[in-house]
Length: 235
Image 1 (cartoon, helix red, strand yellow):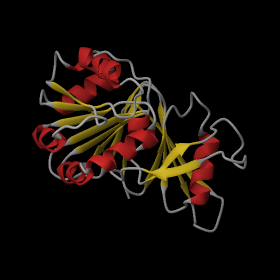
Image 2: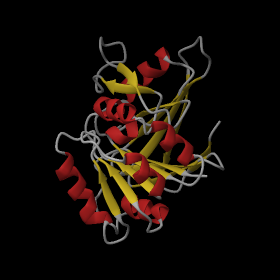
Image 3: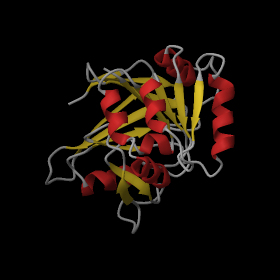
């Protein structure tokens, strides 16, 4: 089966640094489809990653604004990398192309799917589309929900987590959707999810915060914070 690689954003774009080097190991030199639909400047976003990835993997630019045979590309790819930007725009464009079922089925086979920043947020089915992070959890509009891609079921992912003070936002998300596990990922940090073994591991320089409501009718939480090398078993 495949791998999810969920990056909290602002990763060090160097093949020698831990977040990108781990992605390259997962990609195993195969064709990598770089999906730039979240970006306001998709070409610039592609070239930023192409310059890092190209010496180690073959890349192809998937710009979902323009017509293309993306189904053929995804069928050939060994890895997919979704760049940052606006997660709502990214999710809407993926749904509009109709490639999501193929992404999901290939993930169950051998595809590696990575996403950074907005590309991380869309991993959830119930996605944090926008909201105010560094405010009390009961602040109006602290969170706005959107439809993500659902590639990591049962979770809600928040990125730039410590750097933008988003703990209250994740608390609010789980109080509204207590059936979910909250995953807060710092910048330059990633969670690798082995789909077959259902094991998650932490890579990079920051921390990953895992939060869950103890019971659906309470406001008590279970909290876990991990750093590089730490792992946990998915429920």
